[in-house]
Length: 91
Image 1: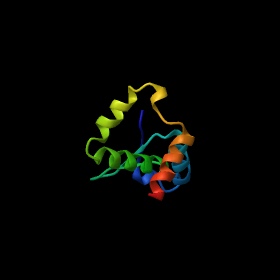
Image 2: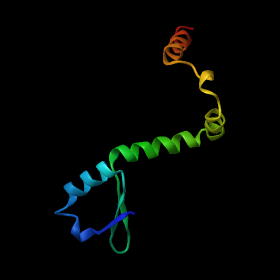
Image 3: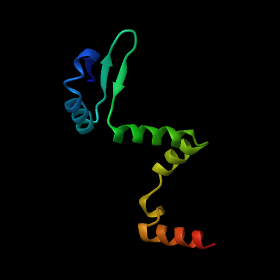
């Protein structure tokens, strides 16, 4: 469940709120009239931005879903992946 705090209560609690949201990965709703805001950790913000970016790439979602169903043996090992990547960079 999302924690809620009033904006006028933040001043003395900001450090503990930042720590709590960073450790729990749960956003904190900050209420104030006439607008509200949400506090979340930098790590969670970056993850959210990356997800939004990836979902903005045409057919990315379909590609991810399709590849979730592939057997493990169809994936390259890390070593083979790095070798192929290096070969592409040298081309």
